[in-house]
Length: 93
Image (cartoon, rainbow, N blue to C red):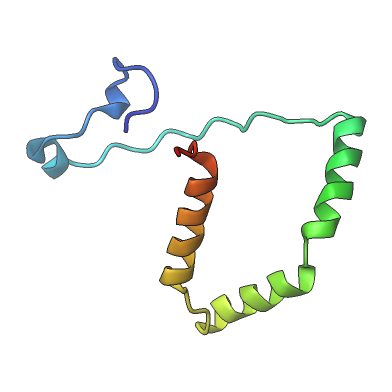
């Protein structure tokens, strides 16, 4: 998938000859855009997110990842993806 204008030279895949050439220096990154929420949005989003956010669970998962103990259940993820897709698809009878 290409993102950006088609005439963007950065989006072109380099040829094998280009890859063998000496690497070009990387230009400095552009500063990030600044985003500021209104006070009304900030208040409504914090109230809703507090009910769904479990800081202790997040810390347990983060610690398991750091320790190398976190195991991904691919079957459970696939089941959830299928269930979510079925909710979005129109039902045909």
